[in-house]
Length: 198
Image (cartoon, rainbow, N blue to C red; front, side, top):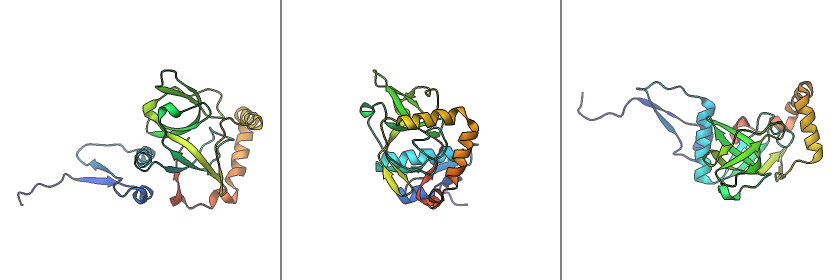
């Protein structure tokens, strides 16, 4: 055995999509210490690093908390934004407990250290989101190949639909099933966008 030092046993966690955006994006994990990996958490941390380094990130929406403003399968373009630029109505990407959330800004604190956000479908706001948790702003929504600018406030029709969906689980399941079977939602290959849970 030679006297040369060896690198400790370990492995790299990589994502092909992240590698394309940032070849140096990987997490080295030691085999010496036990670790529990949450695949979603690793994806979120890598995506947050890409957003920080490249100033743009595209994510595929999933979940129902932002219905009807955002639908599962929508492709969201996220840009970083300084905390001072946030205003009510903006749609924020933030990370909490290793997972991404996309919700609408309801209030910006006067002290400038947290946001109050809420999903358009949800009846209650989320706990305050600290400035360190906020990653960026949704600047474009792509749905069925068409690009939209996010509205600062959902229309009255959208708010009525959101209340109906919230109050009737059966209606929500029917609407989600119909939406899931639209051909345009299945046409984009998974390598072109990341999935996350808003």
